[in-house]
Image (tube, rainbow over the protein chains, first blue to last red):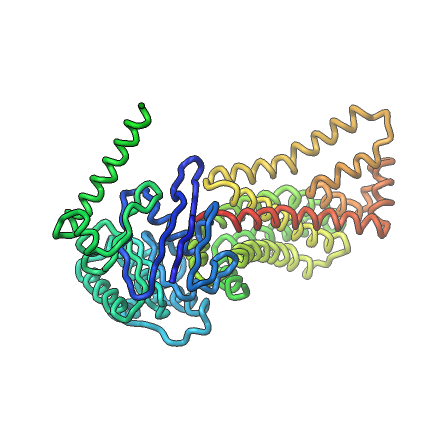
Length: 247
Length: 255
């Protein structure tokens, strides 16, 4: 469904993505992991067209995203930190987003109802707490029945009840055969929600396979120690590199 | 595009700034009308105020507006809308708001107490200068990622075109006073939108007779068909080029 092909991106001198290749298939849910600054958010923003890669190509549903915007109709995106205009009210924000996709008439209001956003529709976005803003982001991501869901740290800042609601919703959508891409540092969430793991390190794909495969390779029976081992390996790889550099 | 423009306009016209700016312009116009009955004196005073303040306010407002709306722009970029439409809707909303303020603030007193051709030119020049400096401001905004730096660039451009440039022109005229300079000054005027606006205004008034031989030359040039065409063309270039460059940079910018 989404294929990322040879993407490179530099911010100044910093190489954030380096000859990046990945395939995302419909019906799978992916856990996108990596240390801070490894390029997770940049990858997501490149797929959304907010960051323009220096080279390479991204295809969504067999169509290149260069110069095309209609592919974004298939994507529900929940940003890490939702930035919204301060003066706009919740109700206005929702009607504006609906106005952007006039051809979609059926809305998925499950999260709007579960989070009670309808009762708050006259509150301005600027007055909302961080958690409520995350709830708005989540509700917007699911609103248009998108076939691809990209969730950047979806559970950060939400209270435990809201987290459970969101996780139940993600599971429901996953079981309907949608493509779900989640980044998070909370490994228990990822283990619960995803079936494939992608580990990014310094702008390169270090691991990309099923979670069973990950456990097998690392020889661990649980998810968290397996990821920890993966992180250890990346660090070793780095120290080897420095030794080689000295030689 | 029109949907985006609708939301951007809705947001901007509701803002306190739009109202304060219009009221300020109206108060300036009303007080000047009260002081003098002579329409040419009114338009001269209004011009002096307008030439100085409108570029300044346009530049500062457009820069702050861009940065205050960065969140909205980011939100829109993740939606199925074209980048260029997101940018143009913001730019057009700013230009429309600034122009409406001038048309209302200066235009209503004119309707009340009368206007002549020079005052109509004043309105047109005001709208043109607003869009030129809004273009500069948007260009400065897309070039940097820092609000303070962008405001700094906008202010520097305003100081250059409103104050420094005239000093340079005077220096050149004095240094080369022994040579015929009419055509050279005319070319220099074309390189500054503020001066161009000012001279277009002055040509409507009788005081151009006070400017000596150069004034007579300007009068002749700007009253001829080709002269007006060239001046309009130069102002159009000043309006379009910064905006075009800003749009091009925006299309490649990362968010």
